[in-house]
Structures are given as structure tokens and as C-alpha cells.
Image (tube, rainbow, N blue to C red; front, side, top):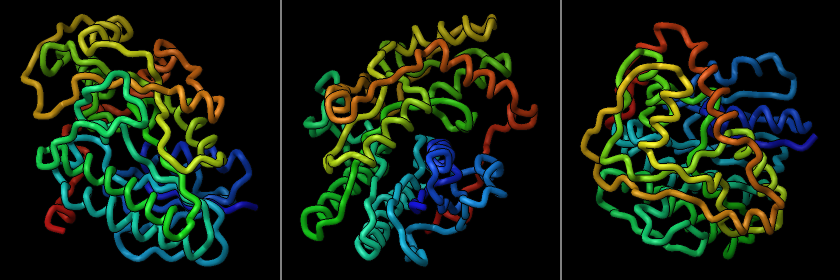
Length: 328
């Protein structure tokens, strides 16, 4: 059996990747320290003979016994609420963590795919965003800890590829949604759905004219899987180019949930991007990939998942205690 290490395995995307690789016949080693991940996302794999879990922080030395064919590095806080509370840990997992895993890939002669993000484009001056756009990022702004961690991650990955000959893949992930998202993680889909389920008004930041493009998790995982198995070492956008304004999206959520809440407007956070839409021409050409799940279908599945949460989870305002990490 091929063996794959997936870091951030208890996270939203990481747990879905574990499922996909097990389905494809791989032996999966999941790694997470639960700083933002949730054990319940991988509980269903606990008795699977082809799944092994290691509780470990990748910013410390990573050791895996035996052969290893692939590494997927998905360990990182990914929502503004998280990386604003643990900025140093966010920078460390993108730098030290990536360095450790590239060293492991080199030692094991394994292929490594690192999870980059559309946030490396910052508040873009080019629309839609293509892989050859360098971005518009405020390095010292509140979002800079995440943006720069990912930009450094790409740079060191390419350095290992060009200098050491490590087989590398880089996926730039755009907004992704689906079951296992954290309800209170600050991103727009769980925020709107959580407010709807609690009977609260929907909060839009700014005037609502900013745009986002949402990709359903199954489509995202398919693109990542194809990229890993491709022969392309440079960054590739994987996301859904179907763009919508936040105001229009709020109205979609109200219609989907059948609620009567109104939309209220608050000040836009600093450096919040005004446009986000991937150009996926490269993914179509290289991987034969494009998203299949339309937003109406994906949102219904996601809303049904959130409706299944307990009342305690629904009303929990702070779902993570970062006390042990804030000084590191």
C-alpha cells in the first residue's frame, strides 16, 4: 500500500482528505495537535486498519518510521478568528512546520503537496486572480501573519524543489465549504448559517459589495488529489470561479434557511479583500478539473450538517481555548 502523511488531519479539509485517500486504497497517517482541529472529525476512522493518528505539533521535529510516499501539509489555522488570536503559532506552522516536513520529504524521497491559499493574493488588484499574479499584501497588517506564512511556505517549497530536487506540489485553495466546518470560525458561510439557526440578524461587514467564490469540499478534494498525482511543481488555483457579492449571498442564506432575519451592516475589517475569484484555466488544462457541485446543492448539504449540531455547539461563542498557545 502507498503511505501518505496528512498534517492538519483533524481539520475541515484535512479530515476530508483522510477519507479520500483511504477510499483510494492508501495507508493514511493523520497528524494534528488539535490547536484548531477537532477530534470528532476523524473519530469515524479510529477503528480503520488503514488509518493511524499521531498527536504532534509539526513545528517540532517530525519523525515517521518506515517508508513514506506522499505528504500533504494542511496544518495551519485558516480563519481570521484563529490566526488573529494565535499569530505567532500561525507564522511558525507556515515556516518551521513546512521546513520540518520538507526535510522529511527529502529524507524519505516522498512527494509533498503544501496547502497554500488565495490569501497570498491579498486584496487583489487583478481580477480574477491568476497564478502569475504576485499579490497585494500588507505584511504588517492583522492578516499579514497568515498571508506571509503562506507566501514563505511557497518560497521554501520551491527552494527545496530547485535546490534539493524534492518533488513538490503547491495548491492555492480558494474559499471552500461543506460539512465539518467549524460553526463559529468567523468565515462567512458558518457565520451566516449559525446566525440563521440562532434566529439572529445576518452581519455583513462593509457595504456587502465585496465578492467571494465558494467551492464545495468534494470538488476541492478532487482537485487536490489530481494535483498531487500530476507532474506540475508550481502553484495551481483550485476553487470555484462562480462569484457572488456578500449582500446577495446573505439573501441566498435567508432564502435557504427560511428565516425572517434582516441583514445588518458593520465596518469592514482591515485589509479584508474586496474581490476573490480564481482563474482556474491552469487547473482545467493540467488536471482536467473543474468544480461540479453547484452552490445551491452544496449549501443545502452544509446547512443540513449545521442543523444536526447540538444546541450547545450552536450557541457556543468561543469554540477554542488558545491559552496554551498564545505565548509560544
